[in-house]
Amino acid sequence: MRKWSTLLFVLVLGLLAQDRPPKPVGMEFHITGQSIERQPDGSLKIVGNAVVETKLLTISADEMVYDEGAREIKPRGNVRVKFSSEPK
Image (cartoon, rainbow, N blue to C red; front, top):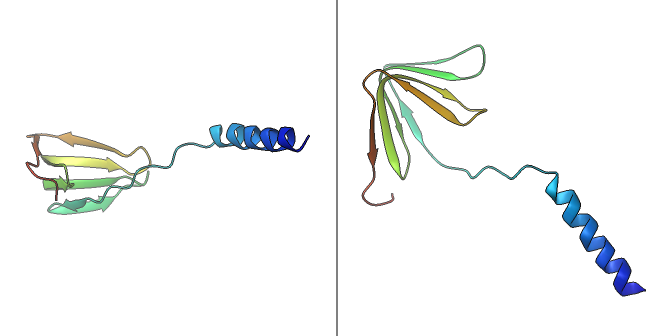
């Protein structure tokens, strides 16, 4: 009987864990630009030589909007993406 109760406990924990969204993987990045402003919706608007650098790549554009909630970057203008040859 004890084996069944332990098995039931493990199954219930597994089912409960399925309802939780996965934890986002943290990634360090640096944002630079001539002007960085927080918008009313919480996003960051970077204008003038906007650059976002991570260990894996660098995105540069005339301007971009970074939406922290959606974890999304929307570059505009002259956009370039450069992949790092070696992870930093």
